[in-house]
Image 1 (cartoon, rainbow, N blue to C red):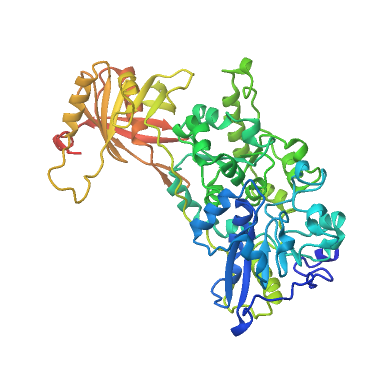
Image 2 (tube, rainbow, N blue to C red):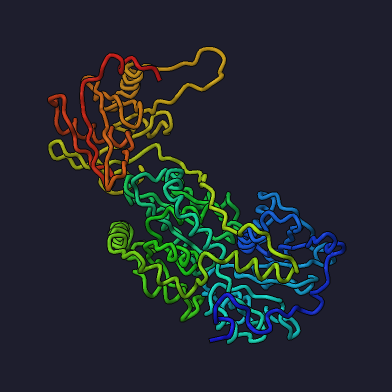
Length: 596
């Protein structure tokens, strides 16, 4: 093993040497003990890594932080947007190369970094060094460890390589011995943010509206071997054919996809899935919070899979990375060890309408059920050392190079913020049902679902006229009156709206008003006004609530099968993975007159 691996937090022999000229300081930077630090980012993904390192200098007013965009990458657009979003103080590239800095941090060795004046610290821009990009360097070298970029005129580019695992030092030593002499193991600051934020899992799931569903996350790297490139229709097909009350679906895309295509074009390409409720978290921080919230992860060979494994999330491999995947890398070993997703319909006309989605659902359920705590986490160990210590170890290294005593307060990972992922709650569902006496099981899917369905249900004031006219069940959700609106606010009574709706849509069979998470009022055409009191589902001390709109569909199916029921009645409604007791009674006068 290379010397840097021993103790993993220690520098390899000679790693304290500085590159020629690196001892110069920015003009005036030494006065009063102040130091100038430049964060040089070539792309959004590199910038995001650097932002995760910022707590190393937290609270230190001796540090002047500056950011610069390294020119030459087609993926720089998103980096500029991200810098603007965080309010970073930026300097032009021309100014950056003119000004000596006490320290420069970068997360990619590409670009004209050798033009910068001062010691350079290189960090990985992903996890595991598992991907080769032959068009951008040596064919069999992992991106980030390629000697073609790490040496400039035979001299190591960086004064320090801050790596995540001793195995990476060994790999660097095999590829570029001179650079390995300047390598040390500090861990992975991004992973430490994920691990530190696990206590916020319930809060993230609440913000995402996950409820009692399984949150399934698709992760796609970029390039021709990525999940989205190989299976572009997978998100839409899964979102269409997996029951909406059992599964929530999110797609984590690589920042380079946003840079290359733009958020608008991506949204247009994903429109069918987005319309069916697909979540697309932003490529900085939000993706990581969604990963913490996940129940299962479907992945390609992108490094996000290693973070999911470190969180011990059940994993399924969707594609194998092709020639881009480095054999024997932690990522290659991970994909070999986890189950492969089984489906046959993607990308072939003759398989259209096959049982692919059902098999996918079975694979997900089986993988979650068979998951053994700790087993997946162990697969990530070859990629991550010093877990929980990355910022502390990195602070020691960086402050030694700055010639400063580190602050007395600890450097701690910043907890991931609560996600605010815009999602379109579907207003229309195709509903399939199974009624057995007072037991009703329903599954809801988007309206274009090609499989069997009992009826269409639509939120009348959120759906198109076409869907409202086609739906057997129409409903509205009661909302509070807007505040501070002058004049009278028009509203309906429950009975008034239900009567109006059945008159306006003569072919519709049931109309309902959702008053709260535990109560709705409905009438089947020709029948009395009924109140459905919805109980909670419980599991291992946790309380779950059904979507009342799903309960409306369940009651509608029960009434259709029962005819004239004997009231009061209690239904066992199976919605998603749980059962909910629903008490059906005649509506009270107060419920009928309730204004909403």
